[in-house]
Length: 397
Image 1 (cartoon, rainbow, N blue to C red):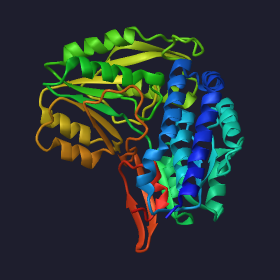
Image 2 (image 1 turned 90 degrees about the vertical axis):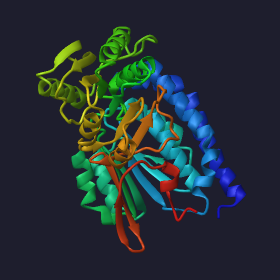
Image 3 (image 1 turned 45 degrees about the vertical axis):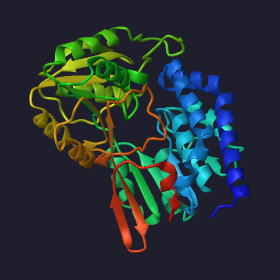
Image 4 (image 1 turned 90 degrees about the horizontal axis):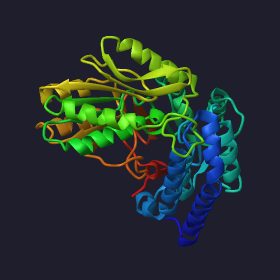
């Protein structure tokens, strides 16, 4: 059991991290815009979300009661929302008494320098700058002090570390989101569904693993929802990421642009309703298609499809290789909720948020993620959504 004095010391460090993010907010906005083209108004919301999350970490104390820390945790922060990931993972590591050694995406050198500066005075946080991520991962494998490794990325990344899982006590792989979906049934609230899909498809230029990439819509509502989505997209401003009114900045990460181009080529039989690619400038792409491929996607892309039979729509959604996230609107067919829970890590029913709340369970199934964990009876593999703080302690009550 952690004593009150030690717990308050941990919470003080968490508060220090929150103050650092808040103090350097303006610097982080500029850095994210210059690094990856992220709009300042979105990065500002991210930083605020991270600060609020850290300042409410006391809520998570019951989750970790009686648990023991693993020791040193290794992690590589993604190029999207690194401040949010640091708040979520760093806050959990500090609360649970672990040490967090973390590196950064090569696409975010300016953001990395600021986050490293914020973290460097907080003892259990160990930022690593300028290190090739593959080399950083190899160092984590070789260092016996690193007992837990948190990795994210494309499927081959996960398989690389799966082959070396015995170097750790626990290995997390947050795999590709695939094409996070929304499904709209016949009795759904048209305005609520349209608003959520349009916002969540193109927030941050669609560069979160949780952004919607396809929507299956009951045919009776399809024209209304399609038109409402297109109306919302027409109001999005594509331009200078430093301008406070910009919604979508340039897509600077080449791999993301290649994924978008591949998706367009594979959706060749579909009809493009709006959007285009002009180098780094990608104007939000909305397509309608009867045959939406099952892809690993990132960026401002949304495919729409009408359906008649709700049960067939449920079957189609569940066939995906990427069981990451699904948002549902309206009344589900009998048995659909259970099937969705079996196939997706995160299922949101009639959601209404802009940025995903950080205290919701996070994680996917199938190719979208897994956890390998050493137990007294050998190794256990599982998937599905998890709570960061709970996973960073052993034997929590």
